[in-house]
Length: 147
Image (cartoon, rainbow, N blue to C red; front, side, top):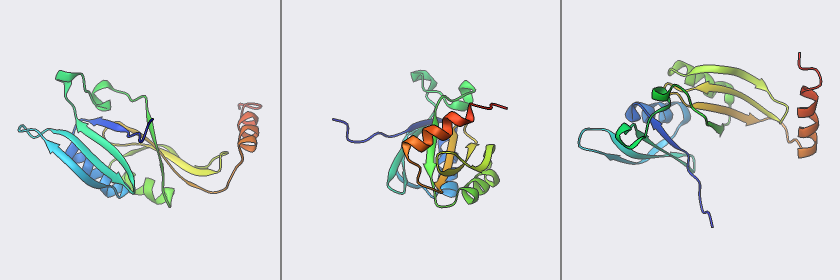
């Protein structure tokens, strides 16, 4: 039986990432384990009741950051009170905006940023309740006229 699932991010500068996530997303550091050289081997951040774990790179163990590999295959989806405000704060703090905020077919206003550490965040807030059937109808309609 699974009790919890935690995103675990590997970054090139964990201390800077922790500062960024606390400033931009209001996260709070719960735990940090540092090795003698100063690298952060494990940190846990509280995102208002949800834990995100992160560490510095440890290439000697095959742990590389999104910056080092030049890509990331995951997107962290974050629900907030005001997406426009959070994305603005993120951009000021050094994130790049990949998709500006806009109302989405699935009932959310959202936008996408890439944080300074190479990770992709889809940030949004709910604007309407959409049933699964209506969501599928809207999704299918998007492909009718792909222009």
